Length: 143
Image (cartoon, rainbow, N blue to C red; front, side, top):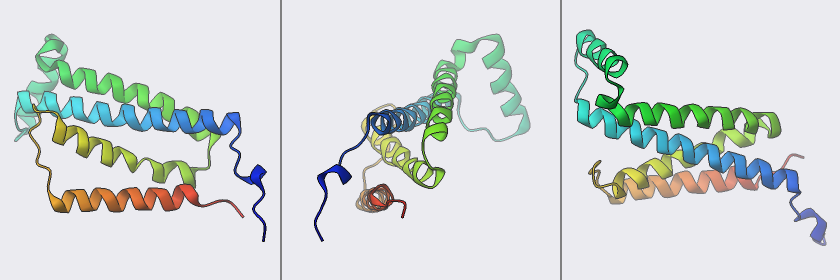
């Protein structure tokens, strides 16, 4: 069986779709990191009253939880980009690619000093397994 080089070409539309997918994944990860940073400043939510206080402080003085607001805005933009992805790609391919956000969130949380999350062998191995799974899904083709 001979490999046809035309089978390896990726169309311009496919490149755009891949770019949008990567943008959405990156924005979702950034949004999660920002929301986490904001919630570290607020502290644990241990009761309905604490949740109400968070919401109220965010409405009255949004900068009191600025990172949370920033995270929600970035995440909202990610959703808008994701809708573009869904209009262009098979869900069975696009959705598993969202697993890349786990990798980006883990790396971001480990590298952003304010979040102070640990890099461990187990987490690195899990991240590697996620990337292997993404590679398998990305490499699959419709028959």
